[in-house]
Amino acid sequence: MTERSRKLQRQFKKHFGNVDAEVTLLGLQQKLMESADPNAVACSELLAGFSAFLDAIEESYNQYEDKNKMAMRNLQLSSEELNSANMCLEHLSQSVSAMLNGLGQGLLFFDEGGMCSDVYSKACIRLIGMEPAHKHITDVLGLDEAKSKTFGRLIAVLFSGAGALGFDELAELAPNELVNQEGAYIQVEYRPMYNAGGELKSILVVFTDITTERKALEKLKEREKRALQTLRISRNRNFFYSFVVQMNHLLAEWDRLLLNDRVHLKRELHTLKTVAATFQLLLLSDHMHIMESLIEQNDSKKIKAAKEKLEELFEYNMDIARNILGSNFESKGNTRVVEVNVLAEVAAAIQNIETQGLEQTKLVYRLLAVPVHHLLENFDIELQESAQCFDKIVNPVVFEGENFDIIPECYAELFSSFVHILRNIVDHGIEEPALREQFGKEAEGTVTIHTVVEEKDGESWCTISFADDGCGIDVDALRARLRDSVGAEKVEAMSDEEVMQCIFMDDITTRAEVTQQSGRGVGMAAVKREAEKLGGSVHVTSAFAEGTITTVSVPLLNNVACVLQS
Image (cartoon, rainbow, N blue to C red; front, side, top):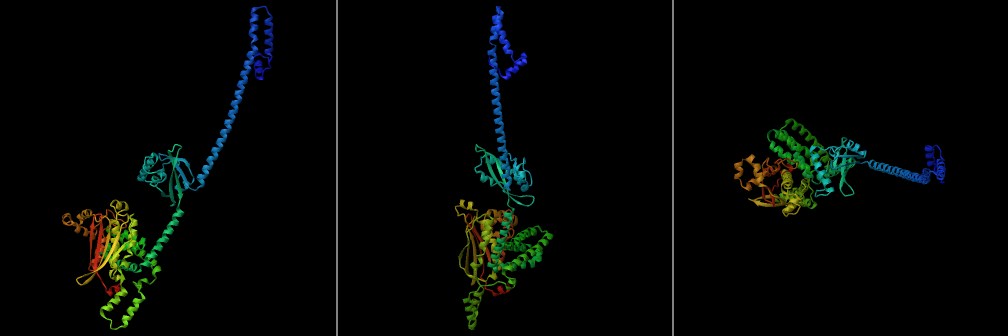
């Protein structure tokens, strides 16, 4: 008889009260076999299979036990693997968190709905002043309603992938900088996050504090501006001195002009504002721009306060100029660099007592006069800076004609007004590069200054022409603006040639709004006024898509009194 397992023995004891129940039953089976009673024999045959039945039960017990052991073993292995995976995940999470927070940058993610996830770096709180989790990205960026709508449409295009532009090109249209509550400059960058299928699932936003770099750049720009101021003033000493004389005259005549001749006041202020900008006196130029608006608004109290500030700013810039040119540059007036051979020629003529009349005049003229192209070279600076403001490209000025000598002091205010012609050329004439290419032109505009001396009725006249290859004057637009000031019937009766000459009228401009550069309609009027003060005139011709020529003609003056009065 097979020895039974302990588990089966426990079942015997539980149900039969004895672990030896199998032995008893087998003994009973043997006795029943020896009986002559047929029923006893049948019972004996039934009990004969009892041992095999118990063997089957025990085998089932063993199989069940093995399965339990295997299940327990698998469970133990799964638990260990799960613990290991959890440890790896925790380590990865800690690493990612350390990486996010260790960079010092604000990092967050937002989905196609613009909602930020709860994964972000702690630096976000410091840089943008809030916890971004579950907030909309437009709120995080502090956008107003209009910008929020625009950014929302951009997000839709980014996630749809339907746009013709790539992610980087579209991301450039998104807000790229903000200023937080502490006044720090924060750079904003965007990075796409794709899934395994190449679909955009979220966008990573990176916030970087660039305040230090920005302040360093501002200091560098300030130094560059100061260096440029020094260069402009020192290289154009006489032009700057002329500006100072005109500024002092304007301040001295301010109250009278404000009361009796505001048109002239606006012209003078507009011209001097433009000249101040060419010398990089930007605070002064900006304030004069504000004053132009105040004069139009006729707010006496504000005008008075603004004039006091104008005097302060002018004096501040005069201190800068004195450091550059010397503390007594104003008392010296204009200066000349005269070649030694010219001085020797004049000295020899003075020693020759027979030199009289015309020859003496010529010698004096040689001492005082300057080549006209030299005086006009400075305006190329204004041309290039204006072009940059309007996102246009202009070649350096081309000079043609005669480089005759003139006495600068005789034409100081006229030459100051020429900055308006050059600004007009850039603002109204030269087209943007893309438009020029559509007309079959080079992307760069060309400006030519032609100078010549002509004899008229026995008198010498100097003619200076400013030509550009721009779009020409829009005569129809000019007619429309003239109807209010001149009258519809009179305007309709005028030829195109006559209409074009109206650009020299006060308060006439085709600009719809006023900018720092143009729009007040006083610049070209100032040119006309200065030319007429010298007994000269101005004239303009223009052709559509070909360009415009502004011609200034004035007598050639050799009056020494101009120098003495300056």
